[in-house]
Amino acid sequence: MKNEKYISMTNKEYDDLAEEAKVFRNENSRGICYGFEMALRAVRNIDKEMEYPQIASHESDFIKYNAQKDLLYKIYKAIQKEQAIEIL
Image (cartoon, rainbow, N blue to C red; front, side, top):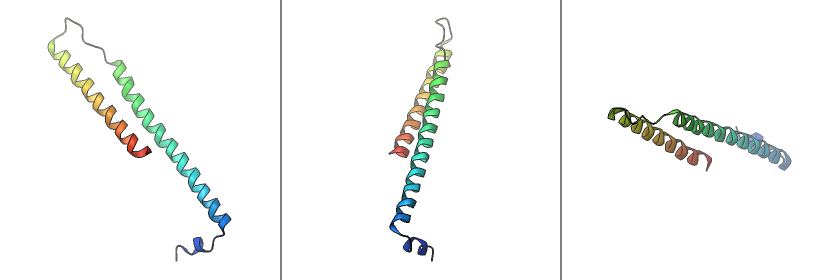
């Protein structure tokens, strides 16, 4: 059986295995957090690079700018939502 090795383990061996699993989960969580933070930073960097159209611009430039900002906002909120689900 697959579980025979766990049944025959001593308490110390089981505690050591549990500690290793805990360390792995912590390292994995840090990696997940880092990935989400980098994704959010990338969206913020794109947002900073966008320039508001000049006053003399066509109306279509303002519509395009607002649509891009709305899309970035939706992406940012979606990443934050996924982050909250994964981390909690």
